[in-house]
Image (tube, rainbow, N blue to C red; front, side, top):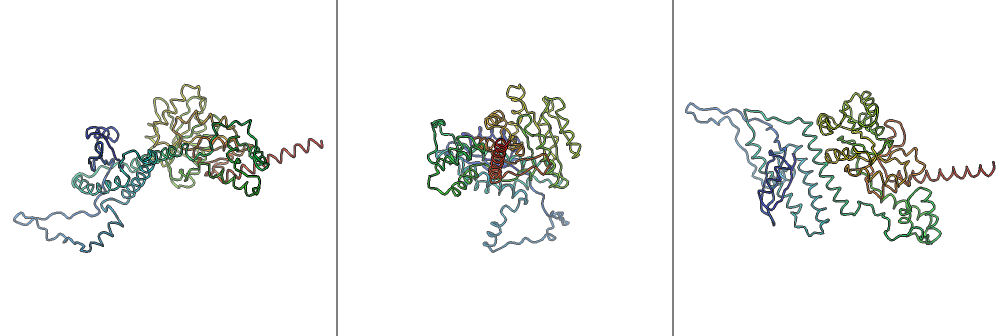
Length: 481
């Protein structure tokens, strides 16, 4: 079930919007006038649960009257407080547990969205408040019971959609709302939580550290591979008399706090994920790790694989081999058999992973591939694959080349092959992307990890120390050789 609110200047326009966006089967729960027009609360795919107990068949007397002596007498609670407490504990008793949970989740998400919109608009927009929306939905739920009972036919059984399709639609709707919430957060914060931004009027060549401690930290962060603009933001407040160890810890903590990390391990819930990125970034290997990990964590789980790479020789072989090993179906998406059709055929799968072609910006089919993914945003969660072995300049270009796909997060790959992590972390800070996962080897699925800002910063420090030790050793050998 999907609950949405529509506003328009007239009832005709509102109904047209409802029909265009939610189809002819949408159920209007309530409508009323608001300032500037009308507001309609609509439910889609609402399918009431069957009655838990069936009423016994009616009996008739010889005179043709209904004999209701065999029916149980109705009982009424005279304790109004008891009824109120029961209503608060279990609102909307005519809904099933799943339906009640779904409505509650939608109400909570809508509250967050309305709050973010009001903050974004500076309070000037005359939108309906979240509390009003919530109250309207709750009042409308009372009408659902009557509507449900009127739709129940004791002769013709209800034709229910497959559970897998209902689950897929519910997940797609929730993902769409979460994506909207994420976009609003980015709009409110400028560029997400990306407070580290290059000052527009800063001339790097003219800048010099204000004191010896700043200079020391600058050199240390430079050895870690960070861009100058990041280093400046981290060290420019360090005073000369600060405790070196304490000041360094504060810099690292500041770095951790400014990194955007996905709040949860989305893969555990299943869903549809597409991996995009340049050739050699590790997309297919990452998909293999994700598929195997999901199989190990979810017994009897169903997985589907899709490849959109139709532009390289033998591009499908690696994914088809993986499908044979796991015993899962592999679909090939092209212009005739579109990605949307592939997903429809795999709608019963708990997890669907999509491999894409690493096309150059000049390739004529890159935009087509990105447009397909963007059109399925909300149904497909797109992850950008960023190899830690690349420079920040290259990674910045990768992000701009693929952001049209509607990127919802990223995976940092090849940590084990990188000599430093500063470039990759600088690119992440600049893009404001949520980092979801990181990979650091070829072992499947052991080298696939949920992203941690603290772990990455700690690893960056250790790698810089190891690199410095190697350089010192090489210099020493050069002196004594």
